[in-house]
Image 1: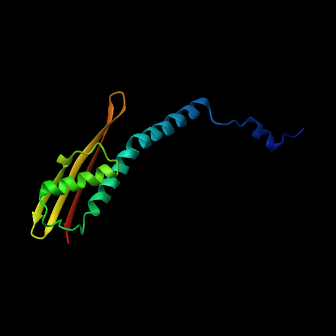
Image 2: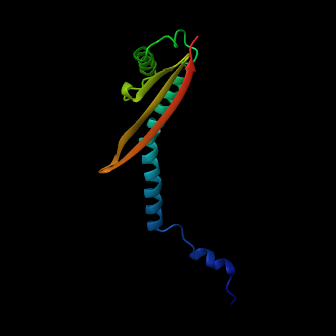
Image 3: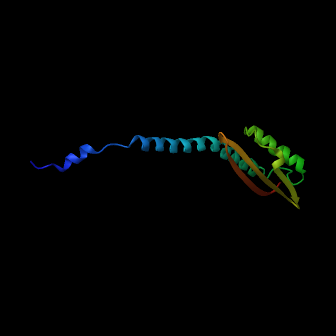
Length: 129
């Protein structure tokens, strides 16, 4: 009797236990990174939006650096950004323009003794009304 070519299909199996375990570990690691780093990037986007919204603020050109920092801190507080330090904000006057530089890094513990460090630097040149 002649063997059917389809009989080889019966011998095929799915992924081995080792393959499944490696896939679970890989995707679990990606999910851990997403959970740990996602909020950091969302906070940075909120900080950028708060700084960009300062452009065109009444009296911005006449404010001192401390007043500008206070204004930024109020906006960040309203947007629930709590872990940001005002010392990371540098405010300088350049004639009618106000130059704001934000340079900071966020460190998170990933697991055990493995940490992540994310560095952000943004520079804005704005003019008030």
